[in-house]
Amino acid sequence: MKDGHLHEKHRGVYAVGHRELTVEGRWLAAVKACGEDAALSHYAAAALWGLVEWDGRRIDVTAPTRREQQGISTHRTTRPDRVLPHNIPVTSVLRTLDALASVLPFKPFRRAVRNAFNHDLITTAETARARSKALRQIAADIVPTESVLEDHVHDLIRAAGFEEPLVNVPLGDYRPDFRWPQRALIVEADGAGTHDNVCTTRSAGIVGHTAATITAP
Image 1 (spheres, rainbow, N blue to C red):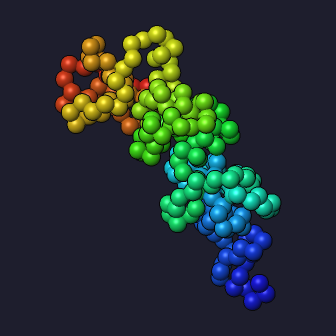
Image 2 (image 1 turned 90 degrees about the vertical axis):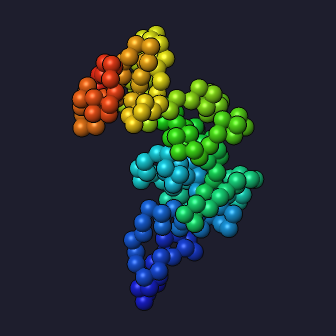
């Protein structure tokens, strides 16, 4: 407005007292611009849930009535299925992952699904109701990897036809990324600063194991 106290972010939605908004503020403004029953959805919803890193793309909002808004990708649904974490209306984790399957390639999508399971945000019983075939398939064979590099190493293990390892299963006070107990073998897949090869297992009190570290470039 002319007095400088209100700054329009979308049609009918204003920031009070300042122009710049946090990421969360931009998400909330986008939802408010799309109507009372609207919800943050797709990639933006996944970022709010902590399943992906926000990359600044156009914000997706889903609502019963589709309102075209500049800078917002709007989607229509008869059932928003929305909840309110951080006081921002957002689609449920299941609904978010169902939508995310349509905008991400398989491996980044799989990482998001595994993040949801790792943080206890979803269960296999819930994913059985998913519309996305990719989501149902990933959930049926969930592997508790915790990073893109761990995903890559696990894919290599399977592609080579090796025995399936224990993944991130505690061993005393130590939690190896990959462990073959019958072979007394541990493989760590992390950045170079995270693990110190065999010294890591020794300092954790793991005796009788051979350890190897795979580091990111």
